[in-house]
Image (cartoon, rainbow, N blue to C red; front, side):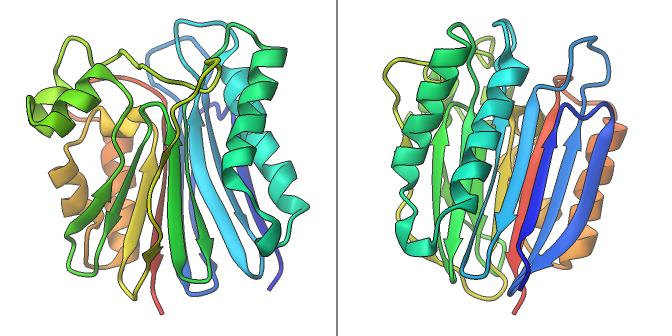
Length: 259
């Protein structure tokens, strides 16, 4: 199989598509905010090689300089690293640390989130820094994993003080404790999960997760037709009808094992 490389950054309007890699079907979507004059600060990436793939998003932090450049630098660091490595040589914690070093060195006041997953065969492991989110669903649409957004609201939800839906409207929703660009990082790493046929993974920036509850997302893409679920979620993001909470850049990847 030829390598597949997708790298989307500073998108002026939106881009979306569905591709196939090995036994997996992948939908990706990235859209600029609709009301702000600022550039799209999200970076979305997928790199698939014969033995493994890596996919995720980086979301530059608004309110700080060079957020867009920081998210690009993180995505580009991942691409250049993965391009040169065989599966047995990939060290992803080291990769995150190196990306953080590059951001701090080149853009000392910039910050970005990072959330990605790596598939080696059918074994998945995910990594996150910041408040971009990751969800896994089994074939019946049940959520089997959520990362914890590294924010006061994210920790309050995990501790049971807030429901996930209540957290969407909390006054401190915009605060983040931990980002690429910090001197000392907290990296969340999930255990390995064996993906079976029908299992799905969703990774997205807060532009998606600030506007939809986990239950709503599961309703779109937890089970049923991959293509129909992906297209419905894209359409919902494009239309942003009444009840949409926060205008922001949106980027997400939806991956399902189909064979």
